[in-house]
Every structure is written in structure tokens, then in C-alpha cells.
Amino acid sequence: MKTLTSIGAHVVADGIKKLRIRCVGYAESSEHYADAVVVSATSLALSIDGSADTTFSGASGTLLFATYTDLGKLVDEINSSPNWEAEIVAGLRTDAINGSELLARSTSVFRMYEEIGLYGDTSDSGVYRIGYLLESNKPFETVHGLSSQKTFHQNRVGLQRIRALINTSDAGAWDLSVYEVGSDRAASLGTLYNATPADNTEKDTGQTDAPMFHSKYGNSLYIVASDASWADSGAYLGVEGFREQQP
Image (cartoon, rainbow, N blue to C red):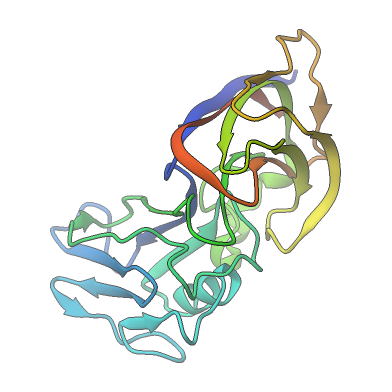
């Protein structure tokens, strides 16, 4: 019998989780702690027990965005260490981070295996978007290739409703799109939906009993509201859907 779990969220400006990370250097029950500090447009510094982690393949504990210029490069570098796991959430591997695309994150220590989100700046030049991901797999299921975690192929997601509004800077129409993406977030696997609502006007696809779209098993749906330029104030994206898991 299929199991359906309702998923979704209401996302506002600067609320896009671009990346999730966690420290797995010690047991979850241990007293060790970690930290991840983002200096916007500059770097991500990762530490354990207050000391920079130097176990990465090509960097010390400070990963410079001038070197790791997009989400894909940054995720690969983080996962090169046995002490850390990272994966892209609402974004693609090609999304740039070498400007101020990621919001700053100050010192805020966390325990082992605790998930921490790195968020996007929705008003950064060249970005101007709010995105949300209906995920078919659970967090960190595919990181480091652990066979015990590879259950993602059994799941797919369905999209039931979108409500979104953008206040553009030029009083023109904005874009609302739905893309199918794989677990690696390498690229869009196809555009399933696109609309161009009027400026500062809510787009509501309406509530549906049957889903607007299903992803293929193992894939996710990436919903994006975007424009060439906008004001953060008042922008939002609401998504309702479900995850379907086969027995």
C-alpha cells in the first residue's frame, strides 16, 4: 500500500534553503560541537570544537567562494571530508555563490548530526527568486553513497497547489515555474509549468484533489517565482503537495 505524507511550506524573501549541512565527525550522542560561518560573498568556515576542520580534499576549514564558485563545487568539497555531509535543497549545482548569493551566517554552534541550513539572498543581483523544493527523498539519504540510505528510488512527489506573489521593480509580469530535478540537482529535467502573472498580483493555481503534477520516482519538483528585479517586501511562495512512498 502506498503511503502519502503531506509536505509543503510558505516561503518569504530570504527564506530559500539553498544548502543543508551537518557534521558527522563524532557520534550524535557525543558532547562535541560544530559551527558553520558564512561570510557573504567571501567564504564558508567549518569547525569542530572551535577549531577549523582541515580534513577537506582541497581546502582548510575555510572554503573560499572565489574557488568554490557554485553550489555544486561547494557541496563536493564539503562532502570530500568524512566529517561533513551537505546537499543542495532549492537550487541547482550551477547556481552561483561567488557574489552575495548566500546570506551571511554568524557563529551559532550545533551538535553532531544536527541539520543546518544555508539560505539564499533573494534580492541579490542576478537571483531575484523565491524557490521551494518538494523532495522525494529524505534529507541526506544519498550523501556519501551509503547503501543503507538508498531508499530514494521508492518515492515520488505530487504538487497540488501554488500561491505566490512578486512585486517587480518595473511593474511588469513575473515568472512562476515548476521544474523536475534529480537527486543530484545537476540540472532541470524539464519544465512542467510556467505562468507570467501581473505585477503585485497573487497567482493561485487553486486547490486540487488530484495532483497538478507528479515527479518520476526518485525525482523532486522545484517551484520558483522569479523576475529580473524586485522588492523583497511582500514577496511569497506557498506550495502544497505530498510525498508518495511505495511499500
